[in-house]
Image (cartoon, rainbow, N blue to C red; front, side, top):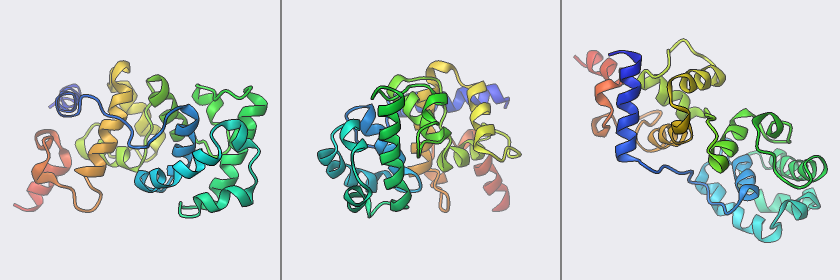
Length: 217
């Protein structure tokens, strides 16, 4: 099977079984999404969704968040991983958007990564979800699943390298969907420790699955 055929098979499968994938973070606008994505680093979406309602109630917009103090915000995100850093990042992010971008969250990766707490992965998520830009955020799920399926070579060792390879081989109009396809597949089927290979519809093209078959005779 060629690389092109493998990509075609995977994309057809997801288009049929997951035609409208979406982020599992709960949000109403770009501000809420940015806060949620910053909080979601090394934390589950479920935990973030339990935490953000109180934040958005107290700080409904960037302006109010930019005026928050550490001692006011910290108790609201105490249950999130790395609460100290994330408290500082959220306040700093809001202040920078207010000061440098006239209170409007920028929508380019180059501008977003200038904000505290926003790396390339977060910037890719924001731009792809809000504006469906052809940007691919590579988290641990995307990194793992894309390699197991054989979409990217095993020799690629960085998220950026995987991101570039996926973007080269997926139509721009589908990249924002492919991001969610790979994440959700990794979250619920292609688990890190005990992947549900027997119930996966991608067995036919999955390099990892065929390796398991060989190992087990």
